[in-house]
Image 1 (cartoon, rainbow, N blue to C red):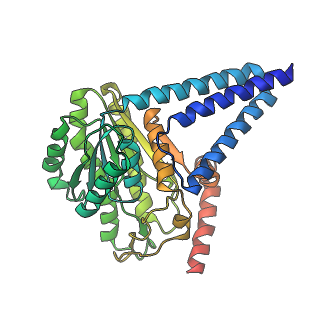
Image 2 (cartoon, helix red, strand yellow):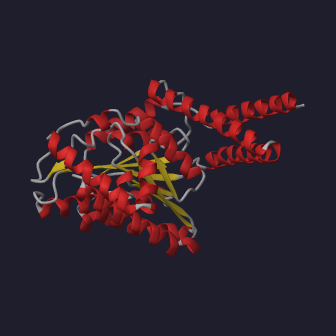
Image 3 (cartoon, one colour):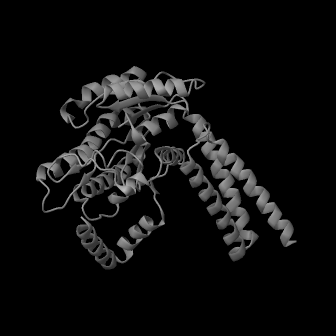
Length: 353
């Protein structure tokens, strides 16, 4: 009897896996992304086996039914993404470019925002060449310096009026920082805060009236694990991400009755040029690809996770390995221990310089 029931569970898991994969229109050949998927599949099997051993069928079967229902809901919501207007900042490279591919392949109408017009044109052409079978509009290129807050409104409003609405805003643009608190010019703190916090808030406030008028909208803020915990030699960056987290949490509560959704994305290290373009304490470009960044998640994988969070309308997601997630919990439950660990980390990093 137990063997038969186990076979039923295996069949159900196999079916849900097939439906889960059917949500992805484009195959990703990157080996790291495939490895991540394999890890997720293995984790899913482990969860089912653990549930069965601990609770038996009365708990395992309802969990499988819920998982199956969740996959079907995601599939339905993904089809509803067709023709949605999505504005993506920092779209000229890295995670922003990967997000453009993910949402464009879902049939969305994309507005690409970045300072580098030539790179935006490259991304636009790449989207149209790669996804020729997708029935959607050509991407709109909007060259814009988001830190020039006083001149944002006119340019952004013109871009929005091309389609007459804005459904999703992905605040992805930002800058990183490497340096010691005592040696960092306050101008650097201001510049990082302007790029990572004030520009996102300003752009969101320009877009929000359109969303409120159309009675729907979704704003996604790309934050960081360092928006939840602060680590040594990242003071300006962590401060800007903490501020961002607080603003989104407040806006989410205040605008809930307006049908405006907010999602905060907290990724760990992503393999982009973020560390190369980071500022030092003197304001110079860091120009080094950190090992942690080089070994980070592929942008394609993170973009897929963000799409899934939008489909599920999640309020916050963490895309990171086990240890950073533990650090967040430790910071909450045992702050003194967390502070002690960070002190040890700071001494070790300073000694290795």
